[in-house]
Length: 110
Image 1: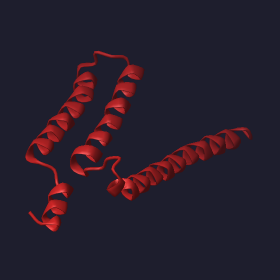
Image 2: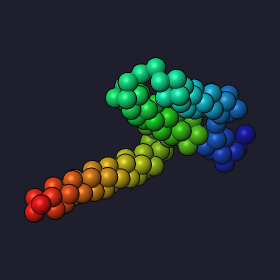
Image 3: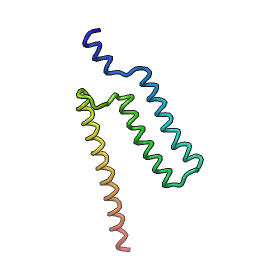
Image 4: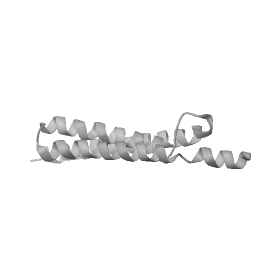
């Protein structure tokens, strides 16, 4: 096997990795769906469970389907993903903060 073929094989996962990722994705989708549809948990527990499963789902997608890891070859991909997550978090938190303060300030006149 040539160096090019080895590099190409390393960039793609095996069928087993894809099936594992698929099963984990289905389970991480079914758990919050089942809890919400059954009404077995309170609203705050349901929201917490949804957020935890969503975070785990993102990690499963990154590891099993995008093959991101901590190897030196993936360093820039990992840094770019981390930067994107930070930017999105700043955008969301900042938007919510601005909207709450605008709402508060607009209601002071009444």
